[in-house]
Length: 208
Image 1 (cartoon, one colour):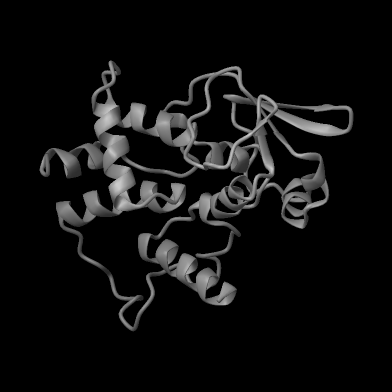
Image 2 (cartoon, helix red, strand yellow):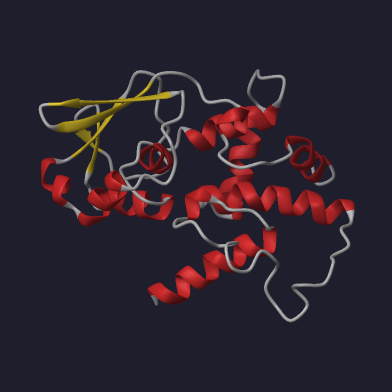
């Protein structure tokens, strides 16, 4: 089952022709930098709709949210005072607890981070939180429970972080334990892969 999941994640990244760090281990495009399937090596023709759809899917797959969750976040982002609702959307996605745990290097992927959260291994300001979608506020501290410090998922991620620590997060070691903190509001630059916000706006402007 684990092998099938990895293959599916790699195929999604190959289909989009981009490495999505949140999905886990690097290398999806290393040996086969082309889409899956028998026609993968053929040059593809893109319609405007296809470009918009793929750009939206990059965000959704990287952050690991279902379509209905993504739509709710978009509606919330559109209701914000930010002039660019995609930037507000990215802010909401980056401040999800599962993503923050991943970006702090406590887990090798967002799904792995979500599992740590759901298993009660993550503390926010010293209190256990089991909901990966919880929004973290600036100033809040994220740590692992003492029993999770020897968790192999955490130890492997600590040794080989998938991404460098972003500018909106800080991390320090206190009494032998890593403590992470959200120090600023994430913006469009927080997205750890190349994407075009205008295509996402275009996709949803046509669909209300």
